[in-house]
Image (cartoon, rainbow, N blue to C red; front, side):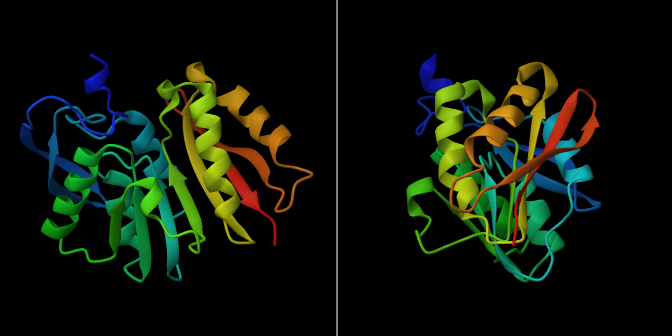
Amino acid sequence: MASEHYFSSTPGSDLKLRKITVKIAGAIREVTTANAIFSPEHIDTGTKVLMREAPLPSGGGDVLDLGCGWGPISLHLALADPSATVWAVDVNERALELVRMNAANLGLTNINAVLPQDVPDSVSFAGIWSNPPIRVGKAELHAMLERWLPRLTPGTDAWLVVQRNLGSDSLQRWIAEEFPGQPGALEIERYATDKGFRILNVHNPA
């Protein structure tokens, strides 16, 4: 059902919490997930690749986990750099509540789990990490990236993991064609490839 898509704002099914054990920031940790969110049984392969391959934040500042789900990337970033403020952004309110629950259980106070419209317009980002929701469709995906990528501060990077068979190359071409020539033009390259996924590095030059 459409109401059960992980990118729905309010899942229609009754909440069913579950505990799973995963590796985050180099340690085995117990977290809580639920039905009607993305990858509730485990950390999905693309997210694992991103967490393993993409550089971690350092030096504090605001960083963004775009399409956070139950929060593996947000938890990973917050544990790696306690001085950073991690904005965990998703349209699924159930997922956001799970991020808050997992952050509290791990003693993390540097994660803001919010809907997209609740991020203040004044906030720019020292880094963006995302396993973007490719299945929302190309138009919605492009609109999402047009909204958030320009909010990188000069000299910083976004790291996107996309399955090769789900359009990583076409997304790379689109970003390359969409942003140059505009104020705050962005540069893009393929950073790594692993297990059928590609990590795209989007750089906002200083």
